[in-house]
Length: 255
Length: 358
Image (cartoon, rainbow over all chains, first blue to last red; front, side, top):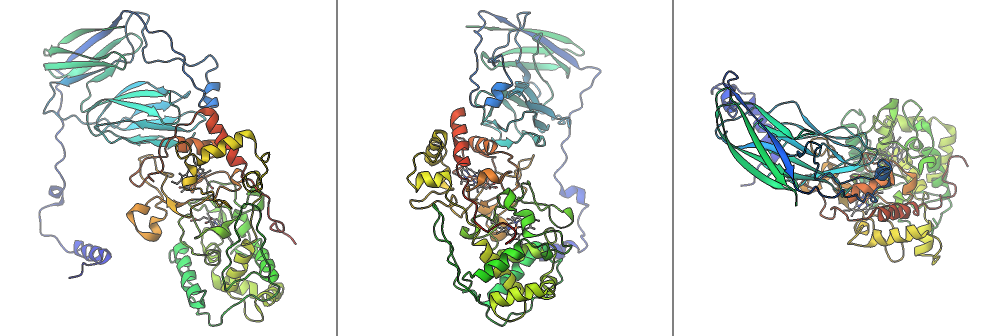
């Protein structure tokens, strides 16, 4: 028998849908909405910590921006590599910190508030970001040049997109945990960023004081992992007592 | 064959494609075979271009060309008398309009950028998605398109028939008889076949043996353009041994028009073929006179040639139908500039007598 042309089939289907349906109410037909875990703030605790740096700081490395004279113009004094940023207090910036284990079986609602990564001065700002799976990622281009952001995801789907100056922000999401996703710009080879995508809200990136704080953590036993683009990963166990405040210390060593 | 019944079938098709049924016209069957009369014209070919393809049934004559030119520049062809073909394909902008997407009837924007009419005679099919087979077929579209000239074909014919000057010109071009939309199409197409531009610095360098016709930067740019390991541009923007059209006449998806969420906004060739692989594919445009026709791409999204080059360096935008020839390029800053210099060397001589007036 010949197959029905698709449009006829579609017309038939459309016709059918107007017939009364004796089945169960519609809501049941949809996949069950996820049951999100509610943290009890009365017992939740906090994990804080500091990422110290010892050893020799890498020498300042000047970046070759000759690929794009317009980028060069924005950095009259030259552009320097920011892979390692040691703070004046001897701590490290741009360390991604997150709960690696201990939250299994709990599902957390993704925030609707986006995380923004800006292409500005032919540079990604910020260089390291954390995002919850399902949370929107906003990619903006504040530069007068075209950029082409390319997250080289291995677990999530990799993609790249050309973005002309003044075009609207890109809105993307990551589905799966991936620590970390290397991000490059296909047009400006020196541009680098890193995205840590995790399925819960317990992540942070260290800033100018090298500290981090994970708040509203349900009491329990956890593995905390910290990651730095140059110095790799470390992990430590921690037990969060009801309403407890646990403090961790990590140290990365320069070569 | 240019059988009259086929003309009408295609015309009606073009009408539908444009107006989505808002047009209340009932096509009448054209019974007589229309042929141009008058003084035959041999269209010359400038350096770098092959002979202009001429359909058997519409050999250009001085009279059809003159009529076509008048029609091309006449705002009479629009419902409110404000828009002509030249509004969107103006000689002042390399026969485009200098806009990302064109503004037509009552200030409305279409969704695509106006391509140049220069050398359109060489296109194997017309429009970004190739939905018109010939220049004749194409010319019927914009007149009736509600966002372009918004004049139904019967109203167009009525307007022209009511004009004594035009009646004379039509008689001179096609012999005595009524004005028909088919004659309008044939005359405009014949005029367009004279809107040819070659003899650019590139042509003089490549085909004229003038080693000094292009700058050193443009010569390096040409090498990058041809190098499959560098620019790889010739893969689609072809350069042949005796001439260069800078287009393979085929359809490719570069990821132009991928929206902020990563989806294709204009399905391009797919709308014509309904083949999955054609989603987001557009006909390779010529690159002749490209320096005159900014902004670029089917949606006018790239403002400068440098940004087009950057777009290619970046490997376009990912999507499931991205052409396999589109991938990140490894070009230094000076190499990117050289490619731009080469593209700028493709500006040819403007055709004589293609502008408005006598």
